[in-house]
Each structure stands twice: as C-alpha cells, then as structure tokens.
View: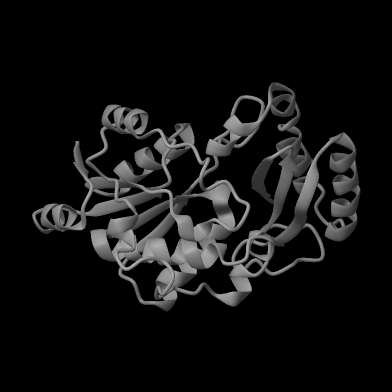
Length: 275
C-alpha cells in the first residue's frame, strides 16, 4: 500500500496508474463503516485511494476540530489489512497552501445545504464541497464513494459533481451499525458509558417512525421529539424529507427519509432511515 503526503507524489502515482480509481474521502479515526466503503469501492473500481484529512473548513466555532480523534498509524494498519491500494494524508499546507482566510470556495446548492445540518452548522457544506472538489481534482478518480450515514452530505456532493460537470460517479454505501443499532461514527467515542446505553434509542425511534406510512410526518416528529427529550436527548432536528432533493414531505411515504441530529451531553449524533 502506497502512502502519499504531498501532491506531487500523488500526481506522479496517478499518472502511472492503470485501470479505474475510486476515492473514499475520510477524516480518519477509521471504523468498520469506513472499511465497508473501502470494500464497496473495491467491487466498483480497479484501485482504491483513501484520503485522511481533518478538514478545518467544515468545522464551525465551538465545534470539535481541535479534539477530533486523529489515529493515523492505526488507520494505515487497518487500510493495509483491508487491501487498500493507496492512502493520501495531506496536511493544511498541502490542501490550503495560501491559507484559509482568502480562499476560493465551492458553494453547495442552496436547496440541499440550508436545511437539516446546514441550518445548524453555517458554512459546513461549503467546507465539505471545497475539500472534496480539491481531492477530486488532485486524484482524478472515476468513482467517489460516500456513506449514507451522512446522507445530506452525499446528496450535496452528488449535486456538486453534476452541476460542475465533474467526470466522477458518486455512490453511497449503507450505514453500518453496532449490534444495538447505533450508527457507527468516530464521535461515538465521546459518549460516556451511560450515554452509550441510551444512544440506540435514536435508531429505534427512526425505525418506528419509518413504519408509519400515510401518517402526518409533523405530528409523528413532535411526539417522537418529546419522548427523546424526556429521555435526555437535545434535538437539533427530526424531519421527514424526500431522498432525492431533501424537500419537506407532509406524509410518511416511500421515497422519503427520516433525518435526525440529536445531542447527548457534548456529543452530536446524526442518523437517517429511509421508507
């Protein structure tokens, strides 16, 4: 497995590469959810490149950029075992050589990025689009592999690739979960033992809501929100929206998806379940 830390080395490798290439962008601290995307990429492309970079542009004030878990040696060992072709581990000087204050940004589609997480994390998706657009230009893959746990991010990046005529296919792999249903996330390690026992209620609630076809989504959301808050959660949102364009839907129906962002203590957890 090759490991590249600078752009010149990555581009030299890419120029000599034969066959198709899939890119799996990550912020490291890899878990089985990330590795499932590597396995998906291996079925769709001849070579797989994983990027590991904690992108400061997608963190807002008061968020966990400084404390975000960085476990590069462990990550490289797991990717080596998984049969990954190459890993790109740039630092800020590689990604933003002129700094971040006066940077050209890639702005996401308003309709997709100003709802759900975008409404609570201003500038987040501009940071995501900018870093992923740079990675796509740097590596020139034919395939971009993302996870459905960050479903809004998947749709935002899929739209970005279409709108900018980028020669890449965007695909998403299913959310990977612990045995009790909690979606795998690097931020799960922030949970206390008591919070970890409570956290699976998020998925249980979404699964119950998804089974109530025909019901008024707002009424279901209000009742579920009250139950979760009484249990100790603080919710940013609990909404039912169309999978394709994230528009709000009045009734629970096929082609829609429940989205939630909930906090337990200092940990923000997101999840979603389709109908």
